[in-house]
Amino acid sequence: MSGSVFALLMLAALGHAVWNAISRRIPERDAFFTLILMVAVVLCAPVAGYLLQSHPIPVRAWPWMGLSTCFEVLYFAALAKAYQRGTFLTVYPVARGSAPIVATVLSITLMRQSVTGMGLVGILITVMGILLIHQEKFLLRDWGLSLTHPGARWALVTGSCTACYSVADGMGAAIMSPILFKYIVFVGMCAGKLLYDHRFAHRVSYLQLLRRYPVESVIGGALVFGVNAMVVSAMRSTPVAFVSATREVSIVFATLIGVIWLRERLRPVSVLAILLIFAGVVIIKVS
Image 1 (cartoon, one colour):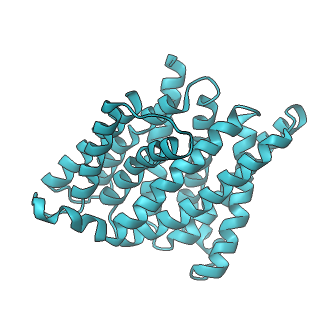
Image 2 (cartoon, one colour; image 1 turned 90 degrees about the vertical axis):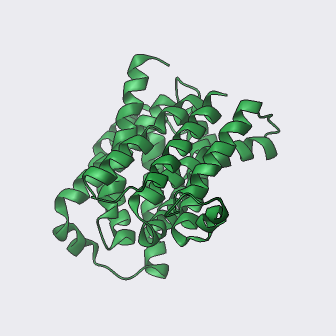
């Protein structure tokens, strides 16, 4: 991995943690996610228009766009529910840490790929961290209780969606302009999220939400697309596994943001859980 790609992914990891932290502070979270998607589409429209003039869209890219769009919409719906039921410091590490586990399972079951012994060790360590993160104290008999926490369940769904749309993004980035690919996905995400809000979420005026949180909306919109654009661009020259491994540094950034900015309490057992999740993810990706 080149130094420039590494720096790009560090920025993406920080940006991902920041826009998640911003969203965690907004009560109307479902509508806010839709709003920042719309802001992102508007902000990046000139860049997309320029790319459309010189970068044709291959027919074989459309299925990957469709898959990425569907899983991204599910991702935002699940993430909103996870933050509604859990704290930033318990939801974010589980959502990020479970993604590589799901990706590994998919590679075994669908692509018939083998997993090394170190990979299995990484999975086990990550699972241990996920089981610990909602505990008040370090008690072995309470490990299973973490999976009964609603925030943890929705965080696991979020991580599963991340693994699925990452695969689609990697395939799309290999055959066309990664930024244009992701922009078209974002347009589809806006449409899908609007339909979801109309059917399942509380009715909120997006214009009123924008007036209430103008700075948060612009920063969130810029970051949510910028992070995705940086990641899919890195996938053009770097294996998806290496890209995913580097992105997990966002767990560290999120921990610092949660403690310093959101003022969330970090219990000793939570510190151990976050360290286990981060270590397990790294082991999975480098094995």
